[in-house]
Picture 1 (cartoon, rainbow, N blue to C red):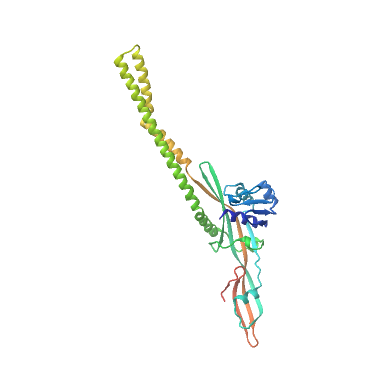
Picture 2: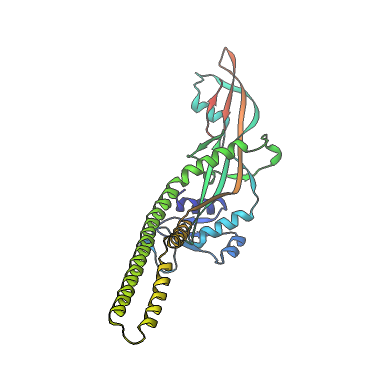
Amino acid sequence: MEIKELVLNFFKGMNCNIQEDNVTVIENVPKDFEKLYGKNTPYRFVFDVLYLQQETELITNSCNLIKTISDYLKNKAKTTVLKLNPKTDIREDLSKYLIFNNYNIINLEKKEKFDYVFRFTFETQFQSMNENEKIINQIYIHEDGVIDNFQIEDYKTVNGEKNDLQIKDLKDQSIAAKEKIKELIQGKTSELSSKLKESLEIELKRIEKHYNELLRETNSEIEKNQLKIKELNEKKPENYSFKIQRLNGIIEKLIEKSNQDQVNQEKNFQIKNEKQKHSLGVSTKLLNKVVIYYPIYTLNIHFKDKNTNGKASLKFNSLTKQIQDI
């Protein structure tokens, strides 16, 4: 979800006053959120650095606001139940979608059952190179499938009653939401993985260069000391045997230092350390579930004109205004 959409949906969900422009002004925020955030309203947010000015705050995925929203949701009930109250005049709505040919509805019998939309709020954390970034996504599910054209903030709601619900669990819906999350974070994961791979390749080349240079310098030092020993043997100055002995000791240490097994062991340790540093940790956890329900009516319609009576049965969706099973 785009960061601006996420933030606006969050504050709309708390019935805050929102003025949208280049600078988004938010007021009437619950006191418990203000306390957690450590700032009193009004909030003046911008989502583009071009509009940043005095007394405004630039909102990014890694800013304190996103962390506070995450913490706030964690402290709320894990499952919330909301009921939609779509404005519905059934007779008027039916007349928009059905042609009655001068028949008038004289009686309308209705039975009510509920349909459901589920909202899952996830927090995904990306950990790499001592950096930590969190993003929040909200997924809406209807009939075990993801829907992208629904926002709870677009409707008036009231607190629902769990006794109204006719569902046993949200297992299938949770699976669908988690699959959608994988899809949503795939781009971010690939982007970070690519950057880490490039950075790792640079570090591995640096390590390889370092140990090649170290080996070259060590071999050069051995050759220099061997040359000095050769000169001492030829000229035989005073105490030359002692000097040769000291040089041989230096050569032994240099040979030990350049031991291929030891060098490879140290180099492999450095490589393993860099690979670990450049690994990407991705973890996603569920912050909150919202069960949203609204009525679907089974209708028996009785109608007549001057001479004839008739009846029809159908199902009417109060949210989408769809008519089915006539």
